[in-house]
Image 1 (spheres, helix red, strand yellow):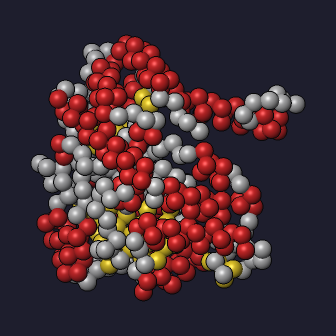
Image 2 (image 1 turned 90 degrees about the horizontal axis):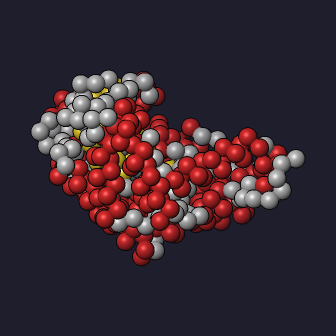
Image 3 (image 1 turned 180 degrees about the horizontal axis):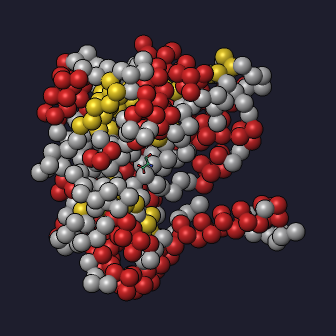
Length: 418
Ligand code: DSN
């Protein structure tokens, strides 16, 4: 048997390999700067709830109307999650069962569209998401897809192009939302376009849900028929997703989620979503979201001042894309060099990228996780300088170890508190 003391002692005695991998991941998170825009470090309370007995329970259906007995306790948590989501986002209806953002989008499509109807979404190559119509995703295989992008010069969504494409193709659904776009999304403009062609409007705020909840980004709720979001990115909570919609669509959305695309809801995740929404209602949460944006702006400005261009020239949100064309590096190379300095990013296509997606000409940088550690603008600027020190070096591999030593020191001064 393994060690009988330590944070994962019980697991270690049952499965030392998994225990060691978890402990290694805990060390990795503590000792690396997490700059992946979709990741965050959730509070210990969220992990407690996710690891609770609720994981054992099957509860097909919805509170008060289940197919299984013994649902009285999970009914309490799902009702709390629903009511809090509605309150936090001022929405008429919430479904908190989708396991992930893609499932939330799938449920909306399934509720509202016959196969082969046309959807108009942002191209993945310009900052959209796989589930907005990519050819290798279910969305691109089940529906006719038309994609819009950003203006070549400004890097801002080309709303004129969106309108033109909507008029030309008469989509049944327009999707406003992105996973690699740093500017405010004008949901009102999307609503106007959707009304002009009698399309439904879906706002996918998976990335910016925390900013929206805190009032740091305008809310799509007054404008969109459907809003999908995740709870683990800027919202800093449970792993999972949810859907908001107008009351008139509530039944169609609920039955598209279950039985349409999912079976048993993950009640441990739903309970953790309830806690996530409660934490997002606290005054501290707004300060946290404001600091995320302040940190992203400080980093973006620092890169620009050091001749590392940022797509669209800056950011209004938690993230931005660094264009590595002038540095002569691919996103893939940059990711690997930065990994040697304990800085974690993802490679990302920039709009009109000449490289293939697996190489890419950019990296995506986000500040939710470093802000969770308590870092502010000074640290954000310093991290940008370190990234430039590595990526701007004639031999980045040689520059990385010295930066890694400083990253380790910074991480030790701002530990992740679980
Ligand atoms: N994987 C998420 C992201 O990184 O944006 C979206 O699904």
